[in-house]
Length: 269
Image (cartoon, rainbow, N blue to C red; front, side, top):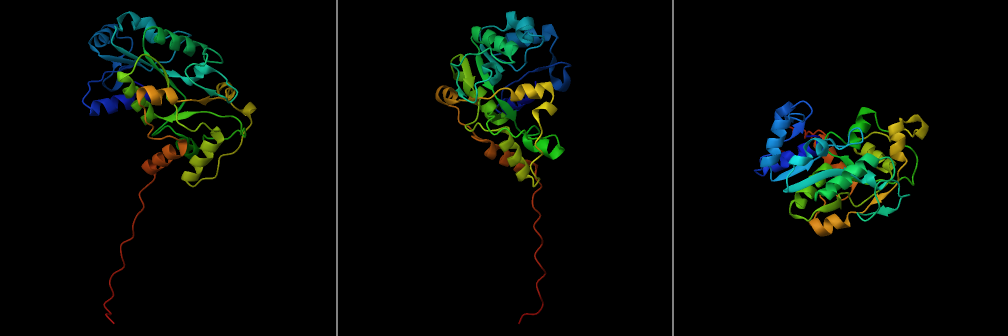
């Protein structure tokens, strides 16, 4: 029950669904992931099973532990557009080859869920409340890298939730859930800073970043979302990062205080 799955659970619960999720330790009313009896019982009763668990130690922990108990009802899996690897800035859709780059284990899990007849939702950079470039700029953790040709796609968490729900009535297969405007990460960071009245963060060299961050910048692609729009009937609430970040800024910025009107003068001339 991570970031996106929690947002999805909240949406479905408001709509009258009964939702159960797992965490490592069973916190917040969830089931502990290794509580086999409880998880198997919930899988048996569920009409829809969605996995948002990434691979661990080159294996998919959900399929390894509970694959025999998932049944034949609706299955969904939150994957990553990282399965496409580096495309040199080109557009990729669901027909593009997978398995390249640094996400071999993710690509294998993606393929395994597809083989089971799941709806596999491939996600790019995820942002939303409490997890956005605005939060990173405000905390001083944001940076720019000065590579104008390095392009990424992203998607707001609310749009992911809408896409998965739209997939409840859709055929099995892979679906890219990305917004309409891939762009350099520097543009997004600079725009986030402008929304909260701060200067753009400094430009740093790739060599100064962690190995994981350098791996992120080693890939360059634009993610096409046409299949999700066409087959799922998916409509983006936030079709580009500007709209999404403006909405987040409005959520977190204090409301302007309107000064009380001046007292009326007693002089009625």
